[in-house]
Image 1 (cartoon, rainbow, N blue to C red):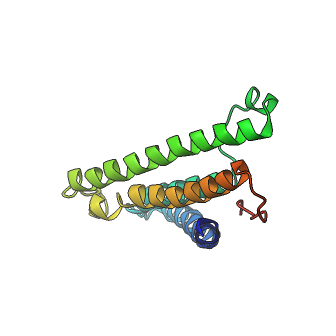
Image 2: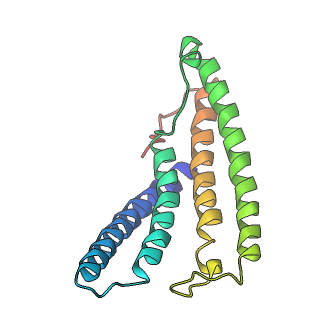
Length: 166
């Protein structure tokens, strides 16, 4: 179940990331050209920073789905496949705990910064900070999909191999 949801979210994240990256490039290019012509766009860098934060948090989940995060597997690869899966399950449970903790802390950050504004644009932080709990929620779905696959691999019964990666 979580694997299907995770694959759908992945497609949305990739498209949104491509759009946001294109916007960042266009915005920075326009800003550089206008500054060269003597008419700087004051708010452009701030908007680019906000968009960069958005793309970073989106791509964290994309990287997790592709299992491209940094990992140290030298010792684990020498263990049996079942032991590797058990260790992977424990790591995923720890990661899930971290994402759930980050969701609650992200919600607190929204409250802490609710009256703070970006200087040049006047955009309140409360409109930007939700990306933290949202991205952690998306990562939680990805982790639950990976846990689901890992539990099936550990189980003693035969199962139809689901493609957990996207």
